[in-house]
Length: 126
Ligand SMILES: Nc1nc2c([nH]c(=O)n2[C@@H]2O[C@H](COP(=O)(O)OP(=O)(O)OP(=O)(O)O)[C@@H](O)[C@H]2O)c(=O)[nH]1
Ligand SMILES: [Mg+2]
Image (cartoon, rainbow, N blue to C red; front, side, top):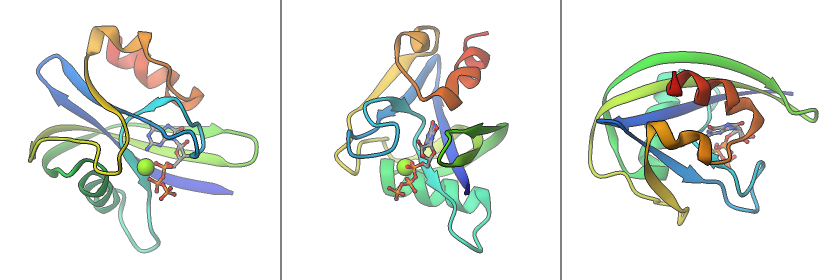
């Protein structure tokens, strides 16, 4: 099964906004870049806008494609489309009750992310 996912790297100065996946979710207890699965007939950018509005309460006004990562978790393969989100309206928050944090980009490696994110975290640190 191939799952297409849009994820936003929400940036403000030298900080990035991350959220904690709930224990009940896949990869629970790990930090992530907010986002989610693309619906049928939806572009990745539409999915990114919808998911960041649903999960963080923001409206994206500027974003740029950053990287595509395919990762095989065994039971499924995710195709993660990462976008840098550089301008938005509203203050990001955990709209679904998830724990969230603004962290310094240089400290990103002290947070535990899913395996699929390891390369992205490295890229952001370099
Ligand atoms: N949003 C997000 N998902 C990620 C990241 N890294 C990663 O491996 N994933 C995987 O991508 C898949 C889909 O993401 P999701 O669970 O956020 O999807 P969703 O918001 O539509 O959730 P739902 O199906 O509960 O409605 C999950 O299997 C998740 O583990 C990441 O940085 N951000
Ligand atoms: Mg999600």
